[in-house]
Image 1 (cartoon, rainbow over the protein chains, first blue to last red):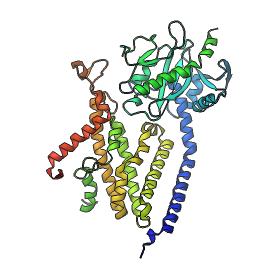
Image 2: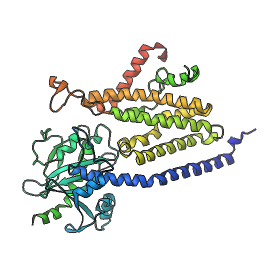
Image 3: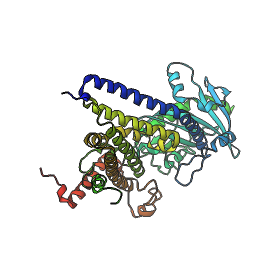
Length: 249
Length: 215
């Protein structure tokens, strides 16, 4: 006699039942954890922005953010203005600008719609920092980050992150030895034109002593990720050039 | 053994050496190559696999008598996928930094053939407690190899262990680097993981001749 579990009708019923049970279990888990995950993401954005302008708890070699429970007050303390730039130079203040989804804005711009560019103006020890979020493509998936600049578009600090770059290779873009190289690097060339920062395999300057060459040293074995970071810096920060020009006048 | 009977203890101990999922059964090789460039990633992957395989084996074992055999592979896959998603979500909610560091690794667990292999070979035919021990044992056996490979690849490839510069600073030329030592960047690439695993297989079989297959 055929076993009960071999029947087609049983198999189909089992499959339906399994889908319902597993589906509702996952839906329950996802929706009950959703607020907490969103909150974590919000905190992370604030931590990243503060990190780029040098407000962090870095010790030698390690990357350490401001603690989760302090970030709210620190963010309010250091970030003086949150701007949204449209049409290159029109600015308005929006204290939720750090929540603007750069990915969404990029795809809107592709469809020909207007893109909102968030810019965070921070102040630390009398110095003004302009921090811009950037986003691009690495080897496997998205890479993104925050770049803090002064009014002459000289990088004052950078934070990079990635979704799925190779551990030990491309994933090293979020290591100190790579991110710290960007500090002091010029985004404009000597004649004042925007060129970005290239990630070079052949600049013969691994200690990055020359800050005006628009180049930092690449990570071995991570050429495509590095090129992605360079392309992202170039295409994203270029959009802020008109705004920085207004600062000079 | 006070806690475990001799048979139960063997379920844990066998996969650690003489029936190791990687070096003897040659399963789970893809993840062993992909994530062992750093010791930390290896350790975290080990912990995640212990959880998923331990719990998954118990779940499959509990429902083993009601699973229709025609779709049992799909059922197994669904159980692994559901567990992995739950682990991912819980980590995101309660340990966000850790979940960011793991990134793609958590998702990669689904593709680990050891998990489906143990479901199919063991949990479908054994009770929950034995299945749990078998799952944990196999995950540990997998993890040991991962950690050994990760240790050598990070040490020889980057000169660090868990991110600490144990051999000195390669740019400032301190420690070993002062004597002209260089990191071997090749160790960071997947082919070297295969060679390290190969060396482990060689060492293990030369110590225990009974493991050599006669072809």
